[in-house]
Image 1 (tube, one colour):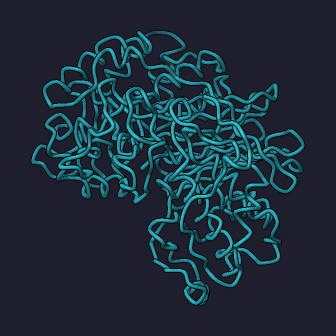
Image 2 (cartoon, helix red, strand yellow):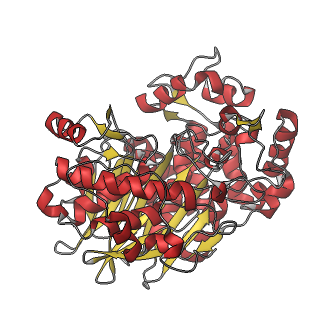
Image 3 (cartoon, one colour):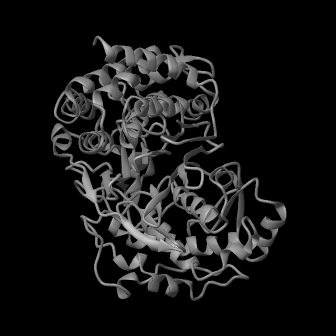
Length: 563
């Protein structure tokens, strides 16, 4: 590569090196805004916009860089949901969720009639066909302005030269050292030569990943889905006892979904449809609480926490029964009906926790069905292009299996299926037949990329990481900004909480005041304190100032950027 393109790449490397030094939680500008979980990814996105790219280009640049510097959360071996508001006002939902191999069976994770969780969480049987790359390529070709190869080249240079391991990355390596060490290709990259985890301050170089990125820059997704990567993965699977084949990769296609559009107060909420459960249940909870004067309860009070927790319990009970891939299961439209929400909220008591024994009967309310560990990043530009994208490998480093010679770690999204009715996944979520394993099926997800419109214009793009807590944390960002009228930075700094029906526990961050915890316990909640719940990344419009604002969750170690 020569000329201006090479100059741009070299400049990118210099600026990316500087980006790590000063993470920013808040940034504002008139032309573009970005919030991601890593400074290098934010800087790559900003540089793309400064070279004439739009918010879609920025999101893709961030995604590919996150696969290098935040590879325990996401990467090309995983999947994503891309929710886009285009400058012309149209909405696009790109489903890049993984799919089960063609030879997958409903009973593949049962041993002696019982679910064997380790099989769906670590190793070759845990991986589905990755979809993130197909989604990014489709978005770049149809809605972006910059060539996809440019984003790959920028990220490849960082993979080649290395990045400085931070405390968070080192801690994840340490926590997963035993499973990482089981796979030689993974161990050779993600652990030191002596088998110990990389430490904060070490420089981690990923030469194989750089070569893969450059191959993708030259050949596009064909290299991945119909070329050397598919072949290398199939060889690895045959050797390790997995199911993925070259044909599985060749058959992969993204899905274009119809976004979920509902209203809350004076806003329109745009969410992602199934196989995301996030869009459905964010809308469902908002519908349940809309009849209550939440603002008068005050943010963070026992009253407001109790109300939201009770609504979340009911939503997650429905999730366990009704939700799955809409191409395989009938997911009722009634779940997002306001009439159905009023029925669910009828027995919700403000002074006491009420038991939720089972799911509601959404199909009886409205006919019809929906048509056919993680990171989130949000981008926006002055033209009106906004992106909320959530991408994941599932748990840290996914299946832990790196395809030899490629630097790409495969996901463990097969654990998001229901191994058998009532069995729980890594996050403790139960499932039913709607989310059973089937060939080509997409597992249920909690990812909740969300865009908020006011008077038809985007005012907020938000989403979170953290398994099922993604849903509750996206919800809290919406409630804090809409009901409690907080600015975005204040909204994301609030202490958080989460309830997912089963186990029947209300998890709260340490920042929740003791008197609030005590009152919640008095009302019948089993309160469990936790250090931190998920990480949220968001961009918002400030119409009065004419600015776009980006905020990176202070919990994430990420960065906000704007220009």
